[in-house]
Image (tube, rainbow, N blue to C red):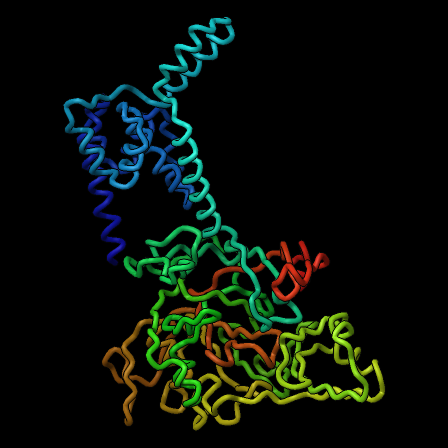
Length: 523
């Protein structure tokens, strides 16, 4: 609401500035107050056609058009400096009012037409062979920019365009952990389309360009928490589908402890063992907006409005098994009667940096069979992953949800937008974060009843879709089994292809040329 108020006030101020400025440009003052017409005349004042103003209706493009018109307005009043261009962009309504009230600043005509005519004079003089006139015109060119300014504007424009593309269209990501092996490997670099599920408009307004949530070296957050825009997604071509690889903001990452190699959520610390919790004594907690939590990539295995379950490592949705990814991995204990060289393990694609313990490896079916075929004495047996605590897995309520582990989990419902489910003390652990955090309600759980926004309730209607995301390295993935549902407003995009890949994220260990330009559709 505060952002809407800001936009309304800004438009009113801009209209008032048009009302004051238009007469200096030979236009009716009242036209500056008429929505739509005022922008058409604004375009005409700087030398554009009136229809040029229609670009202001095109999302994303309108930023370039809007600020370009502001700069050209200053230029039409003879204000050609970099400072004036900056002031026109940052303080547009007030800058226009200044021009309107200034006795020394007069409208010199449409700057784009004047600049075009000046360039024609130079070209005509060159064609006529009038070198002296060409030299004079170029020396007196009011539109000429210094080399320093040319470089500065080019740098600013490049940063702006790069930030624009990164924010709205496509972004590069790297795979830092083994949670998606053997589909995505540590050291893979991906291009991720932010348009596949519709462009999620920025929610955090003030931020350092080209940085996500942290400024290197000084170790400070790269944004201001306020103002915040509400969630909005435009141009959606399709929604998240079952089995999609999805990039999303970590749902549990709104309150985190930051360490050099990774971040831990406040809830992870609460659910951890006393020994684990001692590592966080005296550490500061950082609170982050939705679009500034860490990026994760997992496979969507549970859709809104379905029931999710794992039985003996097989995923069931609404009671029906779904196909496993081709290279899904589990943890195995490898016992050998003969030594196996690291080069052999490397040839089989086994990640030696992803061991679950002594002689324990995360393997897919192909790797398991390859190891067994090396020698009759080689045995490869599944290992049950150990839980850190009995509350380690979501919903962290073993009294009402007993027996959950990585291989046997659920069943639990995955909420859909508009779906109404009954809630009580036996299942509130599933939904309390949705109700209180993701959908911003005041939730009170009392011994005798549950209250939402002060009202006694026994059911809840969900405001958005939720998804269940799991890593393909099933025994070594921190995913929805640990921190629960992924809300729709956390979804960022879909991987397009791998554009580069280094072994174990190290150039020293070599480049995986066979993975370069591999399509995400083949993963």
